[in-house]
Image (cartoon, rainbow, N blue to C red; front, side, top):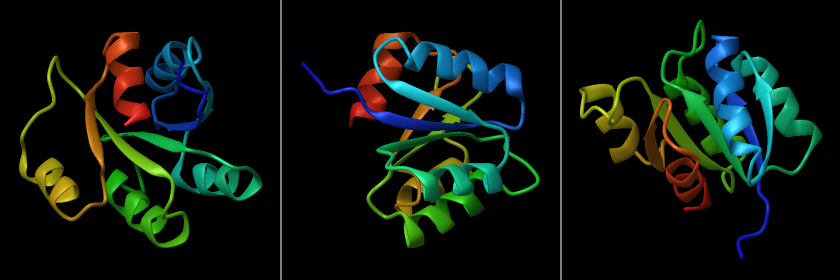
Length: 121
C-alpha cells in the first residue's frame, strides 16, 4: 500500500482546486491554495511531497511557480493539471515537461485512480 502523501493543490479558480483536493483526499492529504504566493507560504510551513498546479494559474503562471519550486523545493514532485479530457500537447506543456519543471501532466477532472497514480509517480 502506498503511504498517504502530503499534497498542495494550487488553482486560481477555487471550485477547480476544491474538486481536485476532494478527489486527492480520498487517498492522500491535500490542502488547497489559490495563489502561487499562498502555495509557497504553505510549503515553507510544512513537509510536502507533491504540488498539483492548475495550468490556468494567474497572475503568476504555473510555469513560473514550478521554476521557483524547482529551485527552493527540488524534492517536491510537480504535477501540471490541464483542462480537457486528455492532456494537451501544446507548446507550453511540452516545454514545462522538457525542461523538467513539470514532472507529470494530468487532465482536470481525472478519476481518483488516475490522479493518484500521477501524484504517486
